[in-house]
Image 1 (cartoon, rainbow, N blue to C red):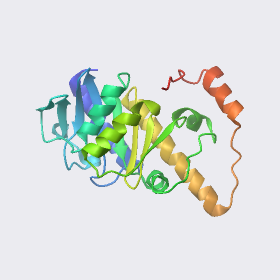
Image 2: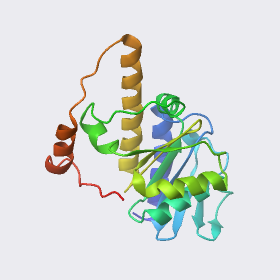
Image 3: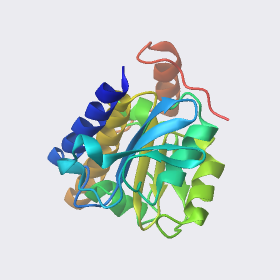
Image 4: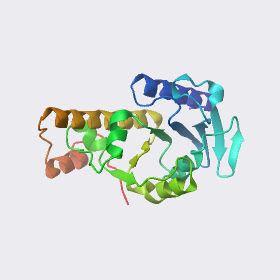
Length: 215
């Protein structure tokens, strides 16, 4: 994929997130890797559902390469790319149900259905740090290898994966599962989750997706 196509995919991802209640307002930022040490990230103050091609900043380890002022959280993205060379896309947002759970001590079940078993296999919690701070960027870097989904307490979520399509699927699965879990609790419905043995058998033997390797 050339750079223009990649930026268009990012642009479409922002629209997808807004259209599916996975983002709102100017809350959140998204990025995609261009090369080993460069990535496009949404510019500061952009509304994810209305971004133009020019609303993405090309950044590197040395900072802004070209374009508008990047999101103040671009260092957080940079740190994930440094720690996870196989990761090529990062979505940071605050969808309602996922953020609700991020603001509690509740765990997100990953044994409800097929997609949850795979995309939500490992979920990492990050204690609150101010958005855009070096403290948050460092906390994310420290735990980047422990999972592909992060709950930022009292802030939102981060998902990252090998490409934008997989990252979109992970974010959608996260929000769908959180919504299912919360609405079941509200309605007094008991969800029969699968056993740990069944989940492990699915992950390693069903051939749904490549098995992930975790530190």
